[in-house]
Length: 255
Length: 253
Image 1: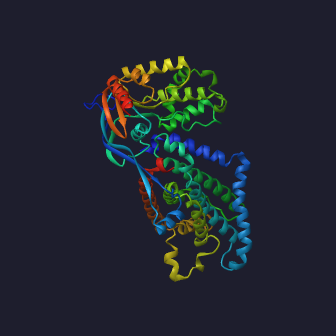
Image 2: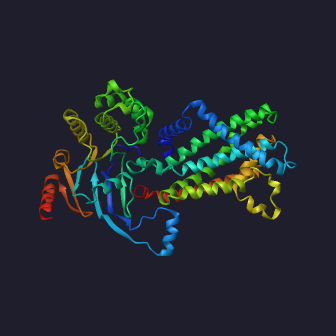
């Protein structure tokens, strides 16, 4: 308790133990009481099973920067959503030490009728951050987003790039310990991207944990020290980033 | 607890919900008051002849019953959409999902309070309400809220899986309206059915509101106790179901 953000002898930020997750895809989607009752009498309950993750285990330490790579449908996003708490695993355990800033999708909950200022507070509230905390970082957020001039403008008048910059900046200034990022780095123009990658370097120095899911192997290589390669819901390779990317290329050549 | 960590989000959701409800400000609110008043006039015209002898102040008897019932009916019929209607906040980010249902119920509570304030003003004009004792009526919500919240949690989570539940629930609410002592006096219920009749917790709550607002008495302590037991049971049961079903919200929504 006393060493909430300090090193209390346990560097494990995220411990994933034997996680499996499958989705049931029914042949006929029963979505009503009526259809379920009729379905019982007809005896039709068929569904396809799709295993997104099978017996996945790993440990992420504080300050680690990890890339999760793999083909489409290999379970990357499912894994990220389970870490974020959006999805629950069927079996296995997951332990998370610290606050998570999820960047699964930027600007969740933004309302176009509200001003940029109100949206920043709303977005903060969605991430469980108090008004006071946001007020403290308010100027930083708008400065980073380069939107200070537009703080009183309604969001519906923003371009999509501006909206994304605003969301990204708010999320970055949440002072979280763990950043979950799902392919959102392509935000803004080149100079904004440069600022973002500088910010990530800063995070690395501050021993923040970053988990990045991406197909852009270049940015994975740039940001992450380690990587995990998923294939068919299983860990095919893990370790030093360059090595895992090589394994990924081998996997692609084979397949 | 999550309620404190996310109190700002609850605030935000409640306010934006109320804003849409009363979108044209004062006129929106007027409409929400006009609805029960017009309903009352219709029911009064129909039922006054049937129950004339039993009940003095039948119009106010009706109005208090209806206003009390409206909190339950409005809250549950809107809370049923609280998860599905905010799919974004379920599938794309983590928040304790109970918050979505809770803020709808809180918003309905605010509306209900406003309706009662207007109702009490009407009662005062007609000389029914004479003492400041009526001002303890908000206390009743402490006992009423857990019941409504518990039912809302069940409905909101089940609706994710069964998308025709809203139609079924609308019918059940209609039935519940007539299974509660809103348009008729309790004395019409035959003694042998009384026990089953009183299993509906809203019945007791409606009577408690009438005790305070119509008869100027304080409800019996046993009434408070029994309603509290119902509230604890329903909100616990609702939370358990909700938590269980919420594990697969993001997939099913």
